[in-house]
Image 1 (cartoon, rainbow, N blue to C red):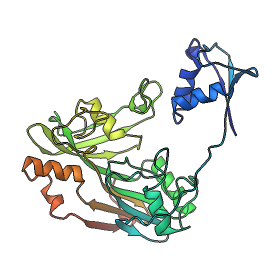
Image 2 (image 1 turned 180 degrees about the vertical axis):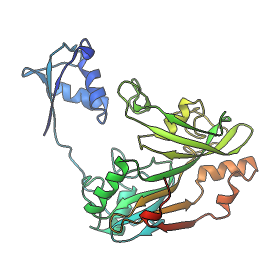
Image 3 (image 1 turned 120 degrees about the horizontal axis):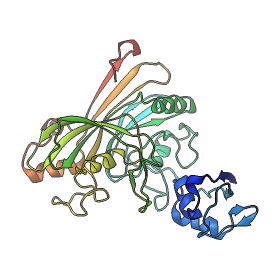
Image 4 (image 1 turned 30 degrees about the vertical axis):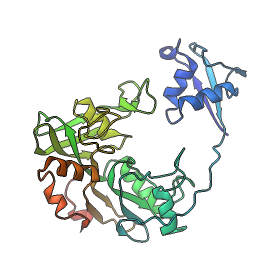
Length: 331
């Protein structure tokens, strides 16, 4: 049973308790917070609070969160496109439509199910039974490079590199419209959307630091093909940042138009390059998942132009480059 205590400051006085908790506990759904309130898990001075209670300055709110009942996650013989593997890490080229780890409505067919079959017990356990080996993730409809840790030592090393923003993560995407500048940086914090809780948004009040660099690779009449490099890794970061410039990703029906002219399934976003310092050797290694996102392929075909011809020519090839830390260029 997890227990939290919040002392209410003047800035939150007058706010409804359910809204306050939604902002503070963004990993919990609004419906789950309502459930906790109904079950008397949110109290003030030992008295259960109702959802419409309005906070007062210096209130001490206590909340209890029961441990989640975690279902058994079973190994499944799902083919993996492995770009690299050793005793510490594994880099996989995730296909479109695959969820990374189990969650509500997705307890089979995930990358974790496939990893359990491929790796057995050789996966880090730091993130619990629902996310073995998972140290970062990409969205279901995003394709490309994903790093998996096979032991806890490797997990801690990669997690620290993510924390200090030293991992190289470059994506390819197609956005609506023509970007005004050939390159730029979007520095805007990202947090839970204030109304639509399943979405993220630019949130200067409660958001976390988020930085995306982009550069134009090719321009078309109504679209732009770009590369994005992440400094941070917030949920839906590239999708939210590009949408904030009024250039949402082609095919993204969450942050862009509900309908797209090419009938794509999901955003045109591919995790192209992934580079990191190896947890055991200290060598910097990077991988290019030169495998065209099916949405990108569909766009190229429908436009009858060589949209990303140099990727298409080398589809399914992987370039791996190894460099010692001392020789590693600035990233």
